[in-house]
Amino acid sequence: MTPADQIRAYVVASHLEGRDDVALDERTPLLELAILDSFAIFGLVDFLHRDLGVRVPHDRIEARNFGTIGAIARLVEELSRGAAGNGAPPKGRVRTP
Image (tube, rainbow, N blue to C red):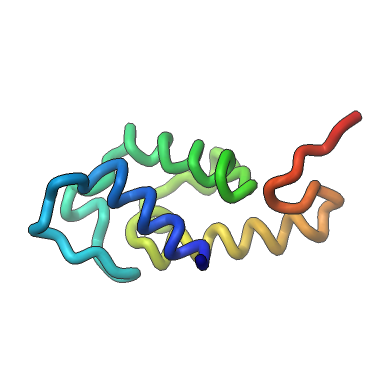
């Protein structure tokens, strides 16, 4: 399952359960359609950290990075690549002292 697939599954399970009126793909405008709001973004940030092992810095939490599944997946990929070069633990692993 790709990061985009995992993000889509999270959004559907957390915010679209029981709604058949939205076809969610990588370009669906999540904010414009009120699928995500500012509160929901923080839950998504927690999901990205907990399930995908990606920490999203506060300065990266902005509409352009959370407007679509594709934008979120690109952010995850970018942060994953950056973490790999910074001595950070690999995704899903916790560094122990």
